[in-house]
Amino acid sequence: MLSRFEEAQQKWGGSHSVIDAWLTERQELLLQFCKLAGFSPFEQNDHALPDQVQIQSFCQIMMDYLSAGHFEVYDNIVQACKEKGPKSVALANALYPRISETTDVALDFNDKYAEASKDASLGSFDTDLSKLGEVLELRFELEDELIENFYANHTN
Image (cartoon, rainbow, N blue to C red; front, side):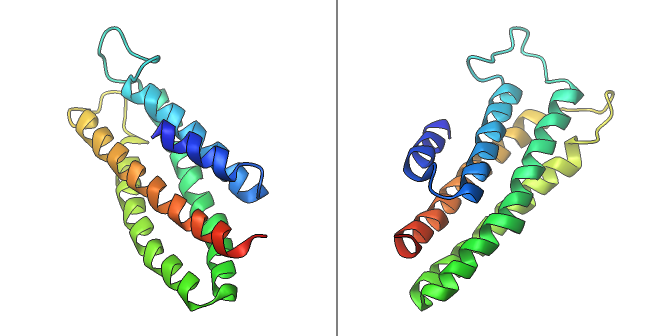
């Protein structure tokens, strides 16, 4: 996921302020995900589950990222695609429902863990976090395809 982010940052960074801000949020989301999952260099020595504050922080960043995508970035890109013709808008319209499916998984994770009490059982947390990681990776691929469509067809 991090290498995909670096690719996106190199390819599109500095080209459009809304997309730049969104990619910065993606970077923060990825960093928080890695911390939560205990990936190097954030490995947890005791193999304990993260504390509730970490989970809440991650969920908040994830919700901010999802919201920015749905309410700022996608609308702008889809509108630009409509102006450029049927082929471009067809791709945007094909990608958007697939991106929305990933949102449902992320919202389920947020609903389950963002407000869980300290004493709540987190027995399925690792499995749910792993599933979320796979879904986020798919989402980033789809978003990158949408951004690529935007830059290939709508910028000079």
